[in-house]
Image (cartoon, rainbow, N blue to C red):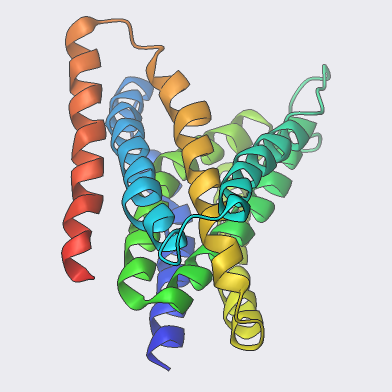
Amino acid sequence: MNVWGYAILSSVIVSVISLVGIFTLSLKINQLKKIVFYLISFSAGALLGDAFLHLIPHSLEGGFHTSTAFLILFGVLFMFFIEKIIHWRHCHEPTCESHPHPFAIMNIVGDVIHNLIDGLIIGASYLVNIPLGIATTLAVVFHEVPQEIGDFGVLIHGGFSKGKAIFYNFLTALTAIVGVVLALLIGSKVGSLAHLLIPFAAGSFIYIAASDLIPEMHKEQRFWRGLLQLGLIVLGILVMFGLLLLE
């Protein structure tokens, strides 16, 4: 019951993060960019730290197996495929509330899939042990904050009203709870589920950090801000390292 309690609470926290868009309504675009700048760098470090310090070591506890390496690679390739699905449509018609751009609709679809996967990963992590579940939840939360701010902006740009953008962001975020419940229910009957999902999670986290977040950080060309980005990445990794003390 402790595992269920922790896992459900974690998924609820991840879902509530989607409401962060509310707090950005009063911010000017320059202020928002500064906040996202810091959050992206830190979350990249947290995702890499969780992948290399928590998820992969747990995947290798029984010794190295080629199947584990393939599952990590599958996580990378799967997230690549998901991104291709999200970006596959384009529309040239004017944006309005009666005609939201397909990219906004696809963003919602992508969010449903993404949050469901997050829930499965969180649930599988708690099946291994509670400290790993907490570490993975924090990595997801650190990533979700800048992502949800970005998703909110995409929906607004795609023609949704602010109220609808917040509502749909929150609705899609609730699929994380569904993912957690599925992982715990299936995992209690299929003991190997966590062993499959943990290396998969590592691969997906590595992909998100290396393919989504780090390229976004390269848009900043000033040297001193590049050093700040590096420092924040290291800080994110150190936070994940500090969580090893819980295990």
